[in-house]
Amino acid sequence: MIAVIIGPPGAGKSSQSQLLENREHLDWLYVGKLLRSQNNPTIDKFIDAGQLVDDQTVNRLVADYMDKVEPSKVVVIDGFPRHLPQARWLLKYAQDSHHDFRGVVHLVVPAEVSETRLSQRGRDDDAPQILKRRLELYERDITPVIDYFHHAGVPIHTVDGNRSVEEVFTDIDRILSHVHQS
Image (tube, rainbow, N blue to C red; front, side, top):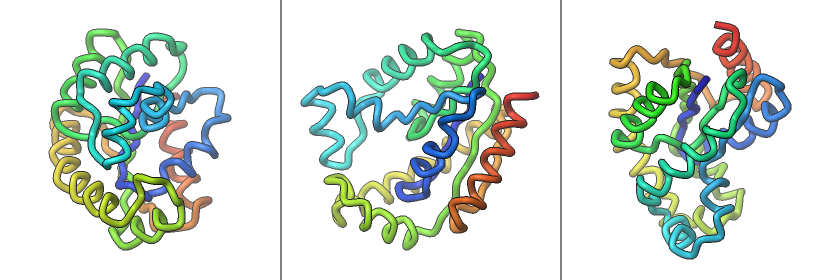
């Protein structure tokens, strides 16, 4: 089973993943971490510049990961898809591999909240000029992704990420538990 969590940089996806990673029915796939773990200078160059890694590379890594997950688990994909071609690939992959695509959790926060949160994180790709570019790319690319999934019949669950970590966690945990049981 597949679920996707979508939200701008700094929306709190990583904080939520740490709280949810111990749930037996979930497998959290943080695509940014997967990419960084490759120790590939070409991939690292894109990430450090705040740019997207090419679709072919990311799709292959996601498929390789997904192919190894227990079918009874919900794989929550964080940080993917980033744009429409990846969304199309993911839906086709889900259909071809008989993974049931159960929903999208859309974590929403204002841009100024993202900027404040990320300025406190201290990663190289959170520098102000790179962060601004990442937020612009996110805003430009994510609306078509959400529209595509909606029109394909994938349930979209919007969650207000501008609340306490615990409140957001309660909502996401409830959604993902329902996704697992349905």
